[in-house]
Length: 330
Image (tube, rainbow, N blue to C red; front, side, top):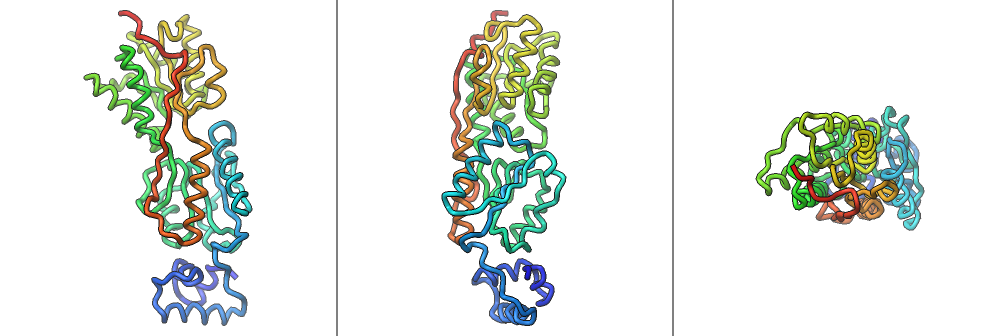
């Protein structure tokens, strides 16, 4: 029996059935009785409470599980194992084209979900919330309503610290190799960069901004465009460490020394950032803690505990290495 079947039999919404099955108090007694009679007519036991021990957790990460995503997913899986929860994994680029979310409320085998940078439109996330399905978003792709639980890094503050570090070194013409323009993280980091420049009395120049897919090849292409400007930037701020590695290659091909002629920064502090020459100045994101915090929030939602803080931003740390230095003399 599914929640959807009970809802159709009783003539009520799926969200109402879910509330009755989970013992929520905000359902009128007559409606509760209507749902229970529908269950009896269908002649099968009612679905188990979603918070019951043994319910599986869907972990959806429709991206290749390397570096950034792999660390988060591994942390989530390890933490769920400590809670005795089975993991159902939906991952990889192929999973991006699969519509998974609409069917979750009617699947009695799935107790809840953790969605990592979900590409689904906001209306699908809101539909899950309206049907009282427990889920947590890690690193939201777009701004979320206040009542949808999420965990992310403090992107604005992190980007501000990176650009302030460069400003302190005397850099004023700073190129930004940002992420996809519609990502919340991209917008937050650009705001942080702009804030640091404003403190130095500098207005950001549109010609110094590129929006890319966060890969080494895209970072290389964007860096080439910026470094070939008539007046090239003295520093490049990359969306992640992979894009920064692409920027290092572009600088090398042009005979530019890092950091003497050009400073370059990354973001994430993955292993790659410690393997370059020079090693990358970057931002260390608490990727494992993001996974653990997501599980903690989900467990509280499953147990129907009151959660006062649904949007959690975790602090980052600026790691200064050899790829940044004083701005070159004019």
